[in-house]
Length: 199
Image: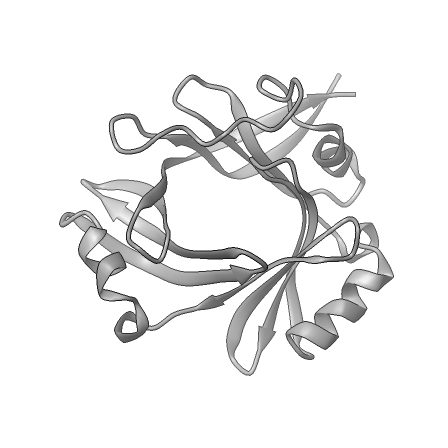
């Protein structure tokens, strides 16, 4: 018997645009890490994301869970870092650099803001929407000319600043990640799908 979870997006890195993201330390190239897998198996799990590099290796994964799967200290940190508001999503996520994080997306004063914190209670990043006029010229000029943005955001944390774009390119759903200098860090095709987990 298998457990079925609807996937919000199965993403894989498109070739010819940038280097594949670094695979996490250890043998995580073919499997979803245990931290995220347990989230996918949680009773309240509703969906998942799996990111693949150009060779099909799992480089990033996430499970969308309920409030009960997020420790109380994360909720308190969200109040402190991003302010009070209505929570819209909870995630357990594993990043290409090996970080495992809890994430809370919350509407604060009309804007959806995401807090990402590591298991050691330190901040990974805060992601906020960004207006087109606030995008640095180097980033704007690096976007593909046939790309149409549907959402734009900026992630900022210790030693981290990235510009996140989701939209369409040549009719395909894509997810682009750029650094402040306009270097393309990630170019992912996004597909809908279904994930079945053995129980």
